[in-house]
Amino acid sequence: MEHTHTAAGHETAHVDSSTKSIWRTFWILLCITLVEVGLAFLHLEYGFLPRVVLNAIFIGLTVVKAFYIVAEFMHLGHEIKNLIMTILIPLLLFIWFIVAFLYEGDSWKNMRKDLKPGTPVETPKVGPAVKPGHV
Amino acid sequence: MDTAVTAKKKWWAGGYSPFNVSYGKLMMWYFLMSDAFTFGALLIAYGTIRFSSPSWPDPNEVFKSFPGMGHAELPLMFVSLMTFILIMSSVTMVLAVHAGHMRDRKAVAKWLLLTIIGGFAFLSCQAWEWTHLFHEGAWWGRNPFVNADGTQASTNFTNFFFTITGFHGLHVTSGVILNIVILANVLKGTYDQRGHYEMVEKVGLYWHFVDLVWVFVFTCFYLL
Image (cartoon, rainbow over all chains, first blue to last red; front, side, top):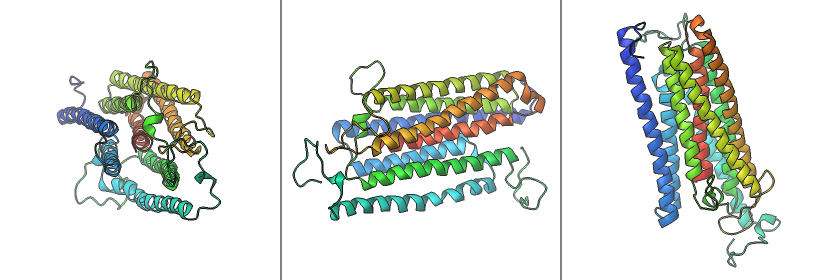
């Protein structure tokens, strides 16, 4: 690649540094995935970190990975602000979307627990390890 | 488009794209945004049902097999391999896009071919995992796995798993097909005649999006 002199000199330098940043992004993504899997194993084997903390870490790291894929691989981080905003602002709807629906789901669970009659899911037939009184 | 960007440029005054990209690329971005909402809706529906269930199957109990390892319990190993394959194929795709900027036809073809191989490798892994789960008795409407607390699980778990990973697999499949079409055009010299390799960039955006969705599927189904 280096010996193509069709492009201007500064262009070649630019491409070289981009290739470097591609591999940097790859290593970041790989390391984050390995950290996630490592934490999951630590939790499985030794019960390291409570489940809630672990889940928060997983979601946080997922967002970091998403940022690197979109900003570097999809090049959005290097586009002008107009393009970045026209993509990111509509995605803000996800915040409401997630909060509202998970709240709804949680509310359903509580209703099933509190208003017990008529919920067939609540009568376990094959549960070997169900403690009495444990729903 | 390599239009020089200066601080005081009036982007909305007309005469050029206010987003500084071509029409095709902008529309690919909008398509991907709408697709993000489709996947988001599926994953949020999954989350809602999971939140509304008193208990749910433990992913480490369900996804613990590895090809050729018999009954050894290896949770997360196979899906980590699949994740690695997809990230790697994303890297080869960016390298193809960069070779395209250099108008290096041979390099574009090489990296695109590696991306296609990565896509096939991922799809093969998914086919193996689906077949394995199917033989364990899991399918749409059938769930052999018990909840983490030992109670009988509903079929929600398998329904969501097969629907969402299936929809993602469908995206990988169409991505591989698009890559093959682009590779044929590269080998024919279509983009050399056109004077630019922007088509590789557009298909590349789609391919990275598929990788992006997998990052979320991986977290939602295998980690949480």
